[in-house]
Every structure is written in structure tokens, then in C-alpha cells.
Image (cartoon, rainbow, N blue to C red; front, top):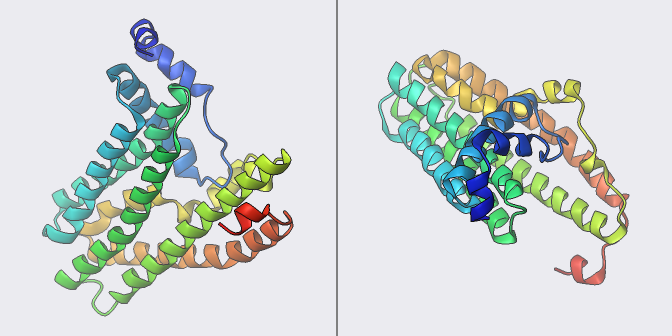
Length: 255
């Protein structure tokens, strides 16, 4: 690995990454067309530095949780809002970079995927708790609406768990039968645009509106409504899809 890295330039790493992208199934527009591209540059740089995917995951977590801490504990101003937006956007791009770096290095590990999912689950929870705390501390523009942040947290947790579990069951079916499932198919550009209100990356950008309390409140609640509607439609669809896959082997079904 070291000798290959010494011979390979940054541009060559980028070129290799462009042909080693994962499928776009279910990915909304910002995550698919913007975040992965930014993550690609970070992944190539991390490869040149000899970093591991887990190290990139840790750096991603530092940026993300720093941004969340600013939401929760720092008085809201134009500058703090810009700082939150930048920290969350960079953290999300690095979250894409760790997986891309793993593919660049020849493959990831179960421990790395576990770490990535645990950090993702944590940030989903504490992000909305941070918004809840921010609204309690500075109620102007959203007085009496703090409960939406807690409701959003519940929706986000359920969606994250359902998406991860559905993906794991699809993989198990593919390994068992060798037949590609619906989740492995390429998502159209139109679909990516249609589900953009559910895009975590777009929410990261929206935090620049924190300095305009009423504007952020309207956008945040709109995101909550869009994500709730998406989840209400997606859960029955995923259930029907998995029901059509048939039974899992005894060992997987009882796990």
C-alpha cells in the first residue's frame, strides 16, 4: 500500500475514485451530486496522507459535533450560523470520504462500517436535541414550537434505523440468491431531485439561516413535514419489498 501511494499522484487517486463510486440507489440530489464529489477530493487527499478510513471518520465526527455544539451552546449570530453550516457541511463531506477512501484502499471492514453507522446515529439524535436547546435558550421566532425538534428527532431515528436495516436485509438476500434487489438499482436524477427535502446535506446548508430565527423555523418545520411524509410512504413500500424477498435462512432470521 505504501509503495502504491508513493507512486500515485493526487490526480491519479481522484481518477481511480471516479471509477470506484458506489451505487446511487435512493440518494437525494445534494448527497449524490455535491457531497460525494467533495468527499472524493477529501478521500484522495487522505489517501496521499496515508490516513485510514476510521481516521477520516473520526475527523468527520469532530467537525460534525463541533457544529452541533455551536448550535447548542453558542449565542446565535451571523458568524455562528456560518460556522455551523461550514462545520456540518465539511463533516458530511468527510463522512462520504471515509467510504470512498476504503474503496480506494481496496475495501472496508465490518468494524469501519459499524463505527460509521454509530456516529451517524449519534449525530442524528444530538443534532435535533441541539436545535431544541437552541430554541429553548433563544425562543424568538419559534416560541412554543420547540416540540417540533423532538418530533423531528423521532422521525429521523426511525428513518435511519429503517434504511440501515432494509439495506442489510437486501444485502443478505443478494448474498443468498445472487439476484440484485431493487435497492441495488440506479436511482434516476428525477427521483434524486424529488427527495431532496429529505437530504441531510441540504439541512446542513439550511443552518446558515439560524441568524434569521423565523426563516430557519419555517425551513426546519418544512424539512420535518417532508421527512415525515417520506417515511410514511417509504415504510409500507420497504415492507412489501422485503416481504417479496421470501424467507431468510434460519441463522439470519433468528439473529
